[in-house]
Image (cartoon, rainbow, N blue to C red; front, side, top):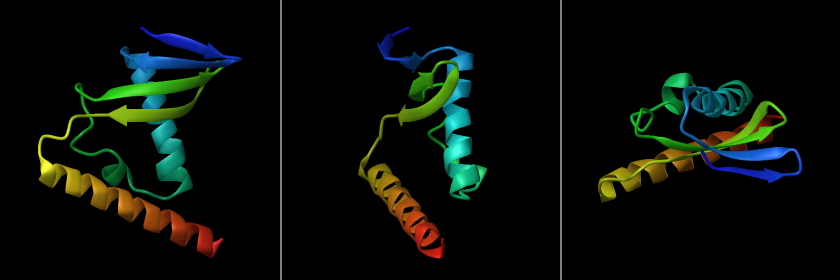
Length: 98
């Protein structure tokens, strides 16, 4: 397990179940609850045992995460880009409505 400390923030390479749970917690809080992205849209075919996560922990609370996965071909890259664009549009619309 890789751990780097920045003051009280720890950076973890999530290899254990509890660390992956931290990544999921951040994703649910940030995307599902805050930006109203459905769980089905947030958790997709790239989530699973082969997904790799970095998780930032402030004291004992997960505060940020990043998911890494391989893209097998260009069509997957386009799908990921389209998903990203949809997310950006939704965030912009959410900000405009507030």
